Length: 559
Image 1 (tube, rainbow, N blue to C red):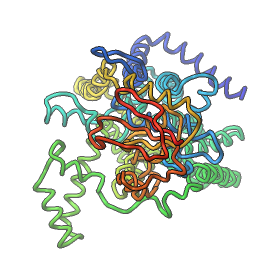
Image 2 (spheres, helix red, strand yellow):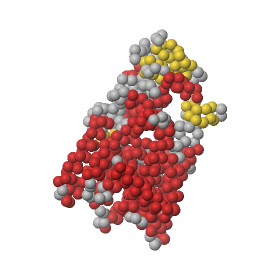
Image 3 (cartoon, rainbow, N blue to C red):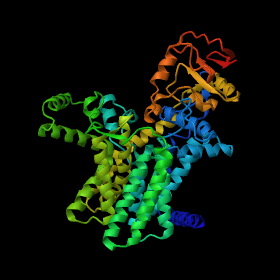
Image 4 (cartoon, one colour):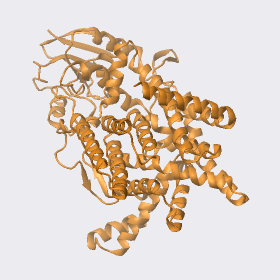
């Protein structure tokens, strides 16, 4: 631990000396903090609008944060861990490491709102800045090269804003489904915190010979990566395995085989703890469905709508699935998908092709290029069971890796003595900025997510003895569990789908309010929202008595 603190301390000292000599980078980092934190730090605050007061949680975080909130305050009270939104189920098949961290913060008196929206984001940005500086400096000490790297690490973006400009004549890039972009990493806290681990591993692997400490550290990284993101764990394992395998081929050192065994064990333990004990999906979690992830781009009217190609594809699939024309349509759609998601990073693909043609690819870069190709291809050819679109999370890691080559390409353009190349470099910078500038506008977004009426009801329920809560109507988020710190009978179908839980029977039970009813023996509280548009009037079963009522909520408790 002392050695690790010394390494971080040295990186910080060198970084501070470096930025003192490169003032422009200070502005770059400052702007990175502004744009990245603009989507987090104002969440969770209490505000009043037109006489109504409550808590604000932005639309970008609304669903996922409440899920993490519910996990942090509920799941880890018992062993085995409980699933807070489905009575009788344990938490399984999910990367809950970040939620354990949030839970530990609550044990020292720091609320989930503060730790999730302020502490973790600021710590992430500091750590990513230091590690990015170290990584790029190891490759090239030129200040412009390091600044180019920091630019793509924090600002790399898609071309989604082009679609919004075309369709809506305004920047609304956040409305489009896409792989995770650099400036948006904090929208998924588990993904965000997986990036420093991946970058730390890449720094270690920049040298062929590894000390025992670094080998163990890579094993720890693998374990924690699986705890944060399954996709990240797979990417990191393949990256480390391929790197060490090629070095073993080159040097024939048997010790490297023992290294690989250690990495296998660390990955397997992480997988067992966070996923296999769950049994959420049996067998391979992905299904072969070529180019399904790209099809919406030409099928949806608010995207690259090309009906002639869509009709041609459906026809060819029905008559000749091996048609060269069909393959051509699919590849064209895939290219649109990749340009849309990779955005300004496409400049890096030009550099890669140039290096490959000139045979100037180092083994280290070649492995990263291989990882990019493999997982980009995998994203295009498969879908995830349960929530098919989730496969795109693999692409988020390939975009992160592509940042390295985009940064190098930008550096060469800006360093060029030819004005045309300099202008191209500036052009790519300008093409990257719109979504990041748009992002800052979310700092001014304000609305009441949960008003005081509902918060008072939830606070009242929180103080009551522990017991399962039935929320009527069933909610699409985990907010009742989160704010009341109690397990719900059923809520939030999205994570239930991801976890492979068959909830339809229970959902049908709840819909039939005349059913005599609801596993009464196990449900202690009924949390009823008035004027909800679904259940205009509700009479609680005779086994329950009313214990709370205000303008919006009635709470019943079992007698």
